[in-house]
Figure 1 (cartoon, rainbow, N blue to C red):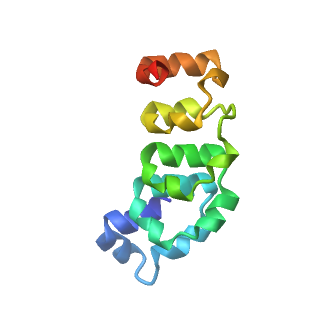
Figure 2 (cartoon, rainbow, N blue to C red):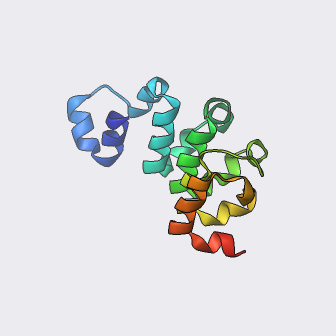
Figure 3 (spheres, rainbow, N blue to C red):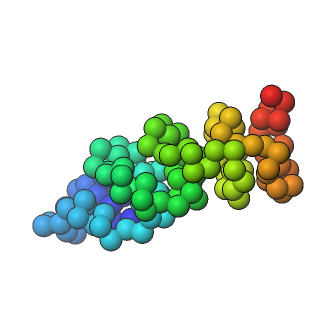
Length: 127
């Protein structure tokens, strides 16, 4: 992951260290968590992504982590997997992206999740 980010943020350094290497070749070695981090930090990499593969590979946690930082990728996520269902990642997503609250049944949040959201996004509960 760090090498791929280096290739995009400092291509001259990457070229010097890996003159024959291509950053995209490293993608195959990334875990699903690293792919989520890559897209969170480098959303322009999305043009190289096979979203069907990502959907098969990513957990809900991977998706919510990505959507927390890059909400524009919501078009690739199958919301039916989480719609109105409890999930221990809702607070992570809604804390940063409260516009997704309509997908969540707020009554099914744990007391801890409710406390976190009341602290960071109290307007979610005012609807």
